[in-house]
Image (cartoon, rainbow, N blue to C red; front, side, top):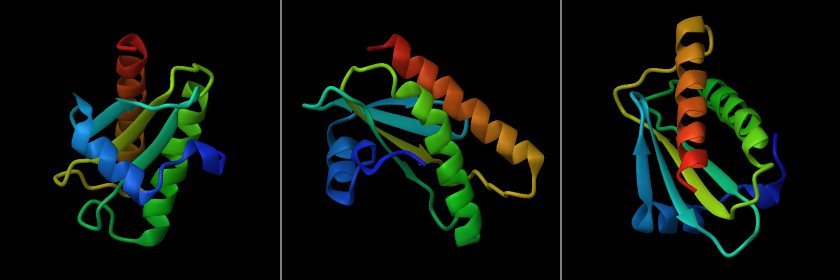
Length: 116
């Protein structure tokens, strides 16, 4: 898990979604906006249609924060919100869904890193 200062609250997520520049992958969308801090902050939106149980939702949220913690080393000052698309079905017991999730997050992080 990452520190609380690197996470976005609900009002900040709404602001990012309103004024963002989106980056797309097959199963996710990453919205990013410059912030006034010298560090990056993250959030992920997983709907109940995407994930059936809270345990699974927290599993994928932790997985995303672990992958994004490597991205925190670059000090560019962005707020980033990951939104998992509705047609995506994530399951913690399905290895294919975990690898797809990891590939999409790493693809979007690379894309965000090149477009700074």
